[in-house]
Image 1: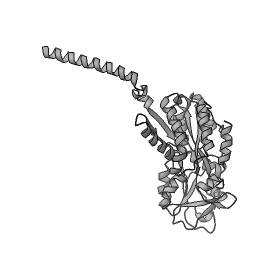
Image 2: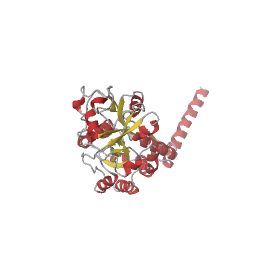
Image 3: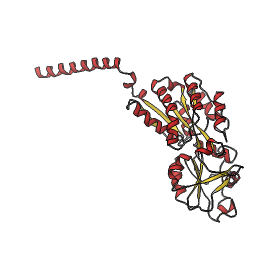
Image 4: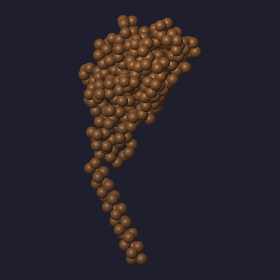
Length: 343
């Protein structure tokens, strides 16, 4: 009995010590150390923006020595906005501005947001290096390939251009939840989501890279960041938007000549989430580091004044969108600056 009583006394003493120490530490350490919810930043959305956000997240987690965990998903811009507008994520990666329907969904979900441009992308048409017959393509030819009426009808390369081979035309592109799909169809066909359905679609750009690289009769569109590390396996096709063929590159995006497939990229941040110090710190870190990290993952950084404007909007609580669900096809960097200045 004495032994049992001794053990009980020691257990009780240990509980008291733990409680006292817990209270002591709770007063000295940040509250979010003790709350799993406040140490997790949830990000989802565009696979195009993913490489940038992943790079920033890795650096941020090093900076915070693991005290804040950042998860980055790739459900596509459209799929990500569904989660974001339900309040399930803190930050939304987007390869296009928020649409009118998504704005309404966010209003219904009580989600207000900051719209922050982070970089430019050169959406890249790619083929296998074995496709020796093609080096450039016009926007009209792309429309002939991709418009809804092409389904089941334009099935061979020679039907697009007579001197191309009489061989199957196999198309690869973004899935319907992808902002890249929305942008490409609007830029090429003239209406977002207006596309033939008989092509290989995926929200995972790595899947598209594999498919295009392994088939000499394939043509597809992917973000420049997925083309650049695979350029030994892929060949970029120049685009003629009416002023002659232009290849995708940082230079042609910056000088505005790569049209209409240059596009700005964004993150959207929930105003509720920004009330948390860890999210606020992450966004400030993102805007400070993205000018360096974006080119490292093969995207075109914005001019310093663009990041300064974004930081000013964020600091001053100027939330909302500068696009109001409208189009931004063929937007140049200087156009983005003017739009952001009016937010």
